[in-house]
Image (cartoon, rainbow, N blue to C red; front, side, top):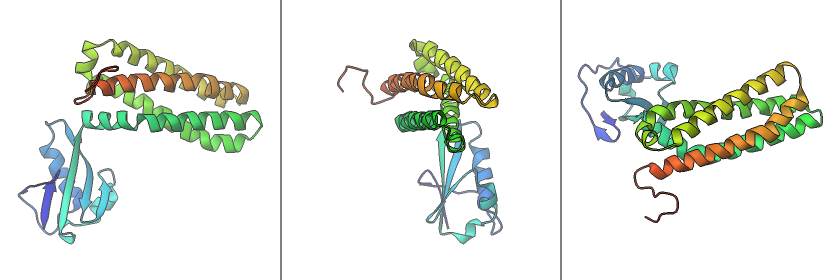
Amino acid sequence: MNILLNGEPITIDGITPEVTLADLVELISAELKDSGAAVMEVVADDTRLSADQADVLSAHKIVEYQTVEILTATARDLLEMALEEGPDVFDFIDERALSVASDLRIGKIKEAMERQLETLDGLEWLSSILKNLAVGFAPEMSERSIESSRSQLMEQLAAQMTALQKAHENNDWVGLADILEYEIPPITAQARELFDELKSLMPGKSEPGETE
């Protein structure tokens, strides 16, 4: 049986037939403790499992597979992936927000609330990324003015998420629709600009207006 870490063969002491995939993840995580990286995924032959699927990982022993690969990523790696995913997420948020607002205005409350959960998931994703950018992209932000843009965007997003919650609690469907239609799109537009600027600072990227 082969054990790989990000494509490279590794040898781990103490491996017995009773060791599960979850045990392996725990062992690797302990080794990575001070590296800033974390286990993200386990590829057991042709089966891909998230490191968060503890029950599934615990149910399978590593000897059941020919090859087990552990894939890791740093906080910055994850943020860079989030920056690449951003445009699709923002399109999704905008589409859902306008769709929910439209349904609310014609009284389709149940249908609107089902899609509103997806809108909130997208906004919470953005909130989480904005919080983590201060750490993951600290060097870039210390040299640029984008930290102030990030902070302002976080404040605006938090305020509108609170407003969404209050409107929902008060069954203020018109107010909820107004926030989704008129307040959320400007936030995603600002987020697009921030993400684009950060991506331009990543290795191999050009500054806006420059050619590589």
